[in-house]
Length: 126
Image 1 (cartoon, rainbow, N blue to C red):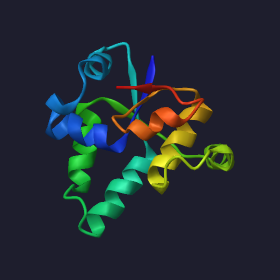
Image 2: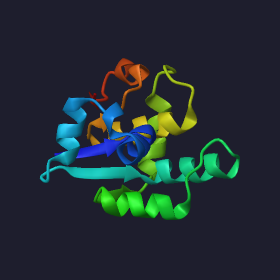
Image 3: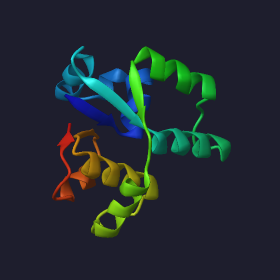
Image 4: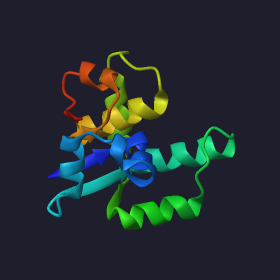
């Protein structure tokens, strides 16, 4: 199974895994699961760190990716085009890009964000 981690879930997995649901954690710990982090999440963490909204270094990010055995999922033009068909349930541009990517790739996203469940073709795990 492939899973896309929401940015918050990636951070929680490193800093406070007890905040992640049992269901999600079981899937994340399963060695058969392909765990992916979007390049959008990498950008989000870099931007939020640079403006002081997040305290997360490049080394923290790279170490976390290695420790969690994540693949980086590139964000493509096809993912961006999917944004045209998304209803306006969510205003956060990073989340909208993650949603469009997960829908296009047809992979579930691990997220605690209740607004994600409003998207008809998005499979969420929490």
